[in-house]
View 1 (cartoon, rainbow over the protein chains, first blue to last red):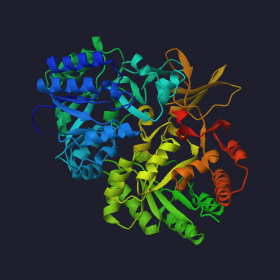
View 2: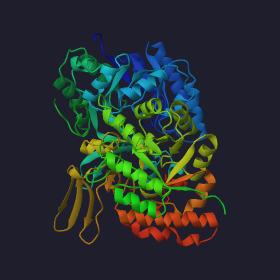
View 3: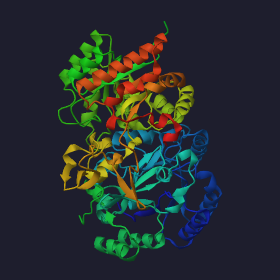
View 4: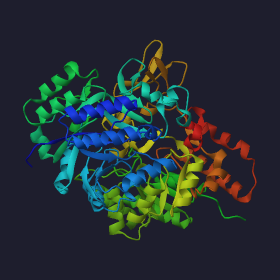
Length: 299
Length: 333
């Protein structure tokens, strides 16, 4: 495979105030080298009604700036309103990102990306989804690059997008941990998740930070950083690398990744450029080498 | 007499436990093959192909059914063991398989169209739309619900789908949506979805100093107590952690699910099968819990029995002697 590896921006996991959200996507539209942007609330359906108008405006602005915009579905719709929102996205003619199997019910073969929270781990499952309209696959974050390459060998016609930057989305729950932390429950929550725009760090009792929670979601504390050179990424069938939004300078992150994927800088330089003044968390990448995800390896 | 409100589905990690569960009144027993194709891939557990055949024969002789759990996700480029597990289940005469992976379901539906398919809790199908997709695409006949739905939500879902509803009734409680949790592989390299294990024993170590004892996972302290208090197994989501200056069980307390007190509500909501968690549990545990639920279901059927005392009847079988009705009550989440 030849050609430039595409750079994408995944859906925002966190609960940012609407003005922050609007400003963020405006900057991505106007200043970033990102090719494709996923928008839409994927973590908590209670946030969606507050964000919808802002996201619609952001999507228009991104498209005017020449970005491909893909709407992402909630990863676990529960009540009627959330199910209706998912069903409405399912009927879109343009490509969507599916994060829950329920979104396939009304898709009727129209194109979609299988999101990382959809459990597609092998070529047989991917082939079955291809029949349903899947054209692109963002593998679950715990898959190794070797495993992804094995799927690519069997299904070379599917575009593969690798989760390449950000706190790893590790788990989803029916329970809200921000609410629990504040002695509340999900239904009575007071949107305390807004206080932690990158998630709330969780440490062991002896002070080792390793996880973070964000409402219903649990993430890694460390920032996953795919420092695999583009030659090896292409061999594994990777056509795009996904950056997950954080409060750090994402325009800068994208620019550094662009240089890296175009072979202008080497893996250590990618890491150094981001750890020097962009990130305030440790970096991890163990999953790509079939190791525990919290480990870091220079490969 | 009323028809029985529930099919009682009991776990079996070994042939001896399977026999005990059948004798204790299980309508159905579920078990797995001795490899990574099932979500309780622990040393010393599970069935060989020959043992599975014998188990089905034994269960059928007692009028009980056997479900084979093939509920992990097949490995990329290495799906053979999962396809082989489906073949084994079929040839052993199992009454159904319970699977989560779209790849496994697709293979089973195509290769063995008359093999009954149940959708595992690991598939995390929590809406009517998701359940209907699996029913339409693969002919799934029953869904095991993720433990994130309240009883009214189960009622809504059950009314909208055309498949049987199985719900967890007792045992270990995943606080994360089953099948949507990589915490274990993040810390240890092995996960429920890919390896059929969570917080595996090989990553566990115990340490003690003058004041405290700790249970660790890959070196991370998950449980830590003074010597006078008991210390639990270091399952990641049940640990005591710190955030924002506060130390607590941030995700879940060490408790077990116990639904003995809400059985009539589950029946009204449309649940037709009750599942007891615990293929890793010993024979005595499975026997006792199965018998208690058999009695409770029979009492529901005949309309007698003192329901108020029932949940307490299994207190000594729960984690830390504490139980919860979990997400079945909305306040849990």
